[in-house]
View: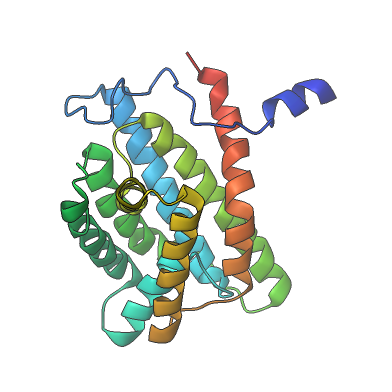
Length: 223
């Protein structure tokens, strides 16, 4: 492939594209099998990325910091703690009048399941350089998984729905709402014993641009 072709392939997308597997509406309770497959694949890859970040040992995404904190205070696994957090967040949808879709429920179940299933297969690192490399790989996996499940268009994840619900109810800018939620979750998770560190910073800085690039690649199948 030429240099121009590579630049075109990795050009970041500015929005979530509609692809050949995308559902025509988020609240679609009879999606095509291919759409469900892409959704489930994306969520599993997402959870695997979180497991890779955890095993790197230098900090994880804010929501997984919270799950780690809950795990530290209980006998729960990080996957089970992630599931509990997802269910609790979904309950907050009720006063916000948000409606969950298949993707929302699948998000809660599959990400938490994949973290626990894949964790034993991911090496734990103890030296800084391998930890940084593994954390970087984890961010890439999360971005790839996000690109797939977002383009399936079967409903937002519980955290995304909470964000959009608060934004609609308050009129605050979406960036401020998201930042406020992430900081709150990070603070609580760190207080409970979750790991905040270089990996958390890498995730915060890298997930946006990496996701944009992954969506740009997926855009190849845009319709």
